[in-house]
Amino acid sequence: MALVVLGLNHKTAPVEVREKLAFDSEDFREAADTLFSRMPEIDEKVILSTCNRVEIYANAESAEKGLWALKKFLYRYHEIPEGTLEEFFYTYNSEEAVEHLFNVAGALDSMVLGEPQILGQVKDAYQSAMKVKATGRILNQLFQKAFSVAKRIRTETAVAENAVSISYSAVELAARIFGHLEGRSVLLIGAGEMIELAGRHLVGQGVKTVLVANRSYERAAKLATELGGSAVHYDSFEQELAGADIIISSTAAPHYVIKKSMVEKAVRHRAGKPIFFIDIAVPRDIEPAINELNNVFLYDIDDLDNVVRENRREREKEAEKAREIVKAEVTQFQQWLERLEVEPTIAAIRQKGEEIKKGELERTLPKLNLSPEQEEAVRTMASSMINKLLHDPTIHLKNSAAPVSEEHRKRGVVEVVRDLFKLE
Image (cartoon, rainbow, N blue to C red; front, side, top):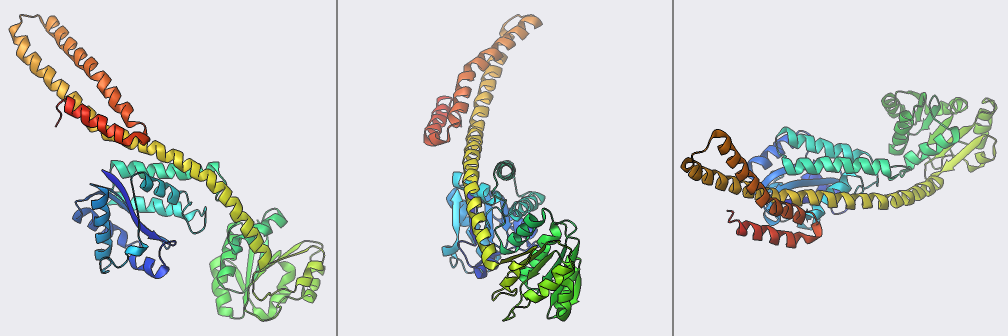
């Protein structure tokens, strides 16, 4: 038995390589079925495929044969010449394989440290494998343990807290200004990716009204529909400033699109209510002088970048705590695996003892003229003798499996005991 991982990710392979090996959702069942039926070297397997990684986790006959079989499968399934992607692969086996999965599930190996999506993706991959009966006792235990490790990381550390993207940090800053965003109104100027991400974060925080202005009204309307808001014509967004609590701007204009004079008019109609501007454009969209106005708060891309950097440092600190959790959990799982390895030997010893007891009783009891009560007493005594004889070797085997660091010593003990009891 050998736990192995074969994969590549955003750190080892560019996107044009990752997409060659990716499995879409419809491919998963077919790929798992193929893997299950044509690879005798592999007992159990789970395929994890996301935009940032493609990995196969497997319980194999041996690490070497298992990894060879997995590579062969990937090349053949995706019709790629064998050996052409070797520089992009990473492989893990045994304890390193366990640690890698725990890190992946806990978002410690993600492009964005602590991002929450990966755990759901790992769970989906595991469920897909279970549906085609591609998992067994080992991977079932491994993945269930990975989910509990991820839960510990989320509850015992702050590795997923503090915004580490420009778009989300903008929303986080707005929430700090207003205390909460429920019921707030938002004006988005532009319809690019960063505006879209910020809009989705804001909607997730409970904003009430979303307006979108863009030079292309069609694009504004499309994004507004996706966010559950309304589009406004770009030439008339100035009239909407007074009604917005939060304005986020990201256009490609070469000059300021929001000037101090515009904001002064808007402020006079807000009766002292604060208005929050976020400028994520380069060059800037919003005239910096608006910061001089009362109840007006302006943050630009540099301000947000500083927030992101500080938050990343905080996440890295929390990640160290998370990695300590992973190390402890890896040790526990390895101990379970070690105990699992000696179970067949313990069962064989017990079976051998029962066979000896049965044979001796069948040979001896017919020669004795015993009452049913006396015969039962002899049978009980024979069982007790076998149990006492095998008690110490059984305990010794279980204890020898516990310390992972004594792997080689443990294997020596198992072989000696099997030879001592003449177990095949």
